Image 1 (cartoon, rainbow, N blue to C red):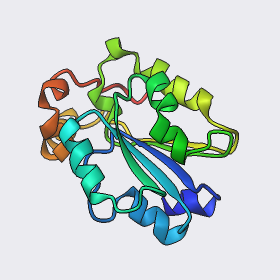
Image 2 (cartoon, rainbow, N blue to C red):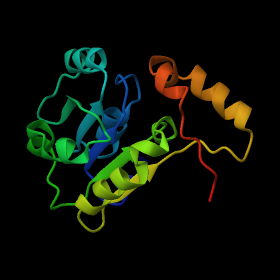
Image 3 (tube, one colour):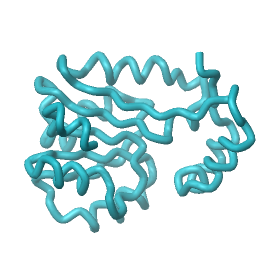
Image 4 (tube, helix red, strand yellow):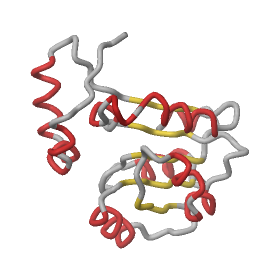
Length: 164
């Protein structure tokens, strides 16, 4: 987040965010760029409800209930469009989520759709578990993290991919 703010990014779309917690995206962004705007997206209605109750600044932070595999719905959502201007650079974050998406859900296709919707000088930040190094350890970490526990059914069909 610090790096993105140093590059002039003041708009963030956090896909598959989970429940905002201490030192989450909006807090770090606001520390480095007080004018930053952040939209969290999660597919869990409980996360969205609790997140909305926790977020005190609707002019700079929102949480949207949505499926990241449906970029056209996320990118056209009124709350997303109300806070983020896609004619200006945006930092899109996909942290600890893509390895939970199976290949049949076309992660490459929907990631490309987000990328293609971004203005030049935007950033797409991705983390992804891989299956060619320490597979067992990666699975343990995924099961340990809150997102992995909350989405254990999906995690059972995880899309761990090779580094290539």
